[in-house]
Amino acid sequence: GNHEAIVKFACRGAGRKGMPPVMAPLSDPNAVSNEAVQQSVDQCLRTICCALLDGNIDAHASGMNSIAQAIASEGGKEYAGGVIASLSYMRDRVGVPRDMKLPAARQLRAHINWAISAILDACESR
Image 1 (cartoon, rainbow, N blue to C red):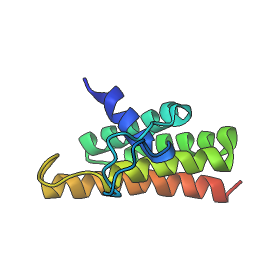
Image 2 (image 1 turned 30 degrees about the vertical axis):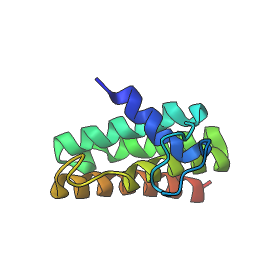
Image 3 (image 1 turned 180 degrees about the vertical axis):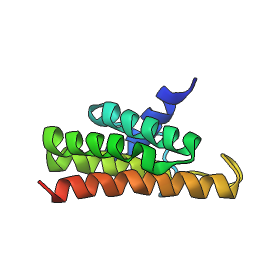
């Protein structure tokens, strides 16, 4: 599949801007991915996908909370910020109708926000 490319794309959010710079703020084909956060972003996206496929976010809440706790405790605040930036980058770049239809995009964005909230909650409880 293409999950590795998707994770690498998402991790641009925690990476650095590419050279030469581009004018469109949401489109930087030269952006460099942050490899340090890739494993955590991958785990979050896999959990998001499982929750989407099951149609039951509650069934995956404990798994997402465990991932969020590990990100917050093992990685620290800056690392968690990188994971959040990566998930936000992905959420903000889902294109309708290029990538998916509007209802699917809304669900994906909502589930990404669910993961971000879990990480923020885990950071606050530390």
